[in-house]
Image (cartoon, rainbow, N blue to C red):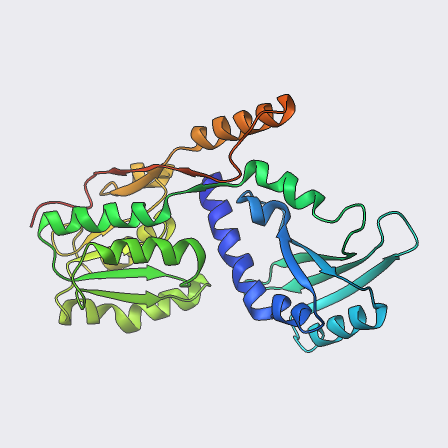
Length: 305
């Protein structure tokens, strides 16, 4: 798995954890403003599994802060919690650190810094994080995939993803835009490999019954996994079903057949990040969000019907 695919998958897992733990509504219940910061907010979440929040309240009540944390303990996936009281320092905050065990048994660290509004560090790190807030055009990438399949003559297509939020939602919505209403279906597949294999086994015959001739996966990882599954059932790619992925990782080029996919250029991210950092250093203006283009790469897993 290449570094961009790893970052994308970890970002998706992190978003699901945020949803499962109800971090944002729990803090908001005590009147707090919640800001996502750190590697997840910048799209650079890779090997270190951490999620960072800055929590702001206009008045600081240590009791309220503890009250929020008590609500988190109702979620049995939290393994451990710690706190550090820094209210009497210039930081004027309380640090909360929690460890969460996900469905794949991976341990995530969730850092929540409860800060008094108007203190020295109010908004400081949020401003810094925007320097590298680089995103790719997920919606347009999905649309390019869908438009290409329509041009090839497909009238029934399946979208597969393990969630329908954030970037995956954008990719699927872009894909569906290229089709007429009722021409696309969506599978929300399980997150663990064993459960996915069972899901594929239970549902793949639906594709044939519904005359689905094309599949769009939100990542090359899922596209290649499903392609191998179908080939194991003697379903030919692209003769019987055609598949498009997203990312253009190394495996997509070396698979048999090679995978048609949406390419995102890693070097563009690096170039844009360097330009932003140089502009910040020089005191020049810079964009706080940069949307990077994507391109359709046509390979052997698709062809004209």
